[in-house]
Image (tube, rainbow, N blue to C red; front, side):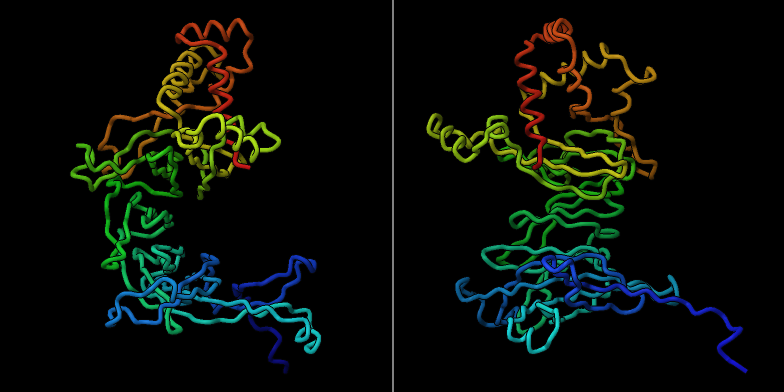
Length: 426
């Protein structure tokens, strides 16, 4: 009797693995590392971590930056689902890999196509939950690892062959993403909007400066700026965009611990990530030699590049319906001019199926409890798809619309050109 016949079919097993591929050799897999069973790879980053020789809290508290060395790691965050089901809480791991390049003599001696080795340097168990995000915080020449796992944010430093926790912060539900600029952190919670934190090197602490108290399901968060003004934007499950600022001096900030919502906009598409880009002017976009153009502009105007319009950071992202969206900050005169143009265009242009473009862009409130406490919509965002239709109108219609808002055709077209050039990300 063949015991292998008539039984139940085997259950296939899936394993996640980390690959190192050689792009110069037909994308051949050079080396790999297999994860454990039921372990999923969730985030991957390449970063340089500072090697701290002294333990945290030791007698030597002042360390010269020149004496510190850095090591390049491939950091991998994972999450493990127990095979027994959801009765057991999930956990994760942080794995640090180093890539060692092989010399030509070693390759010939081994007789293999491998040009590098992937070596696991260190691994750390995380019991708070799956590791959803990994980032590198660089302050005063010291690089540390920021781990987002479950509802916790851990600050870890590398030294003596291990990771040591030096700071932490506990959010509400689930860490979705962490964005870092200077020593500030923008943390997005999967169920409780965004948090604005600061890292203080003096006492090595993560401190909450402000947060948004509305229960928003955040899919993506990003940062945009114009001059010294910085704005945080988030995208939620209702396909909305909201723009926040940290303004501790305003009454709406509740003493400084609440992020103030400046504007909102219904996008109508879903996304999961934002990317920043530098907003360039039309003089640089249409120049064959941008470097020479910048040098010539600085000779003509010593203050070129110092104005707020020359120091703008926008965001761009792709959506699930195969579209590319760009969001750029505008100066106040340009905004009010385009807002007036948007208002007259909404009445003058024919809409598809007689639908209102204004109603389509209104903020969609969350059905969750407490999501409708603020009944007024901020608006404050220009619909680029609508106002760019102005450039395709006949000249007579352009003149009528320009006179209706007290402007000129040339000025409006110049603003639209700068808007379109600022939204280019290549």
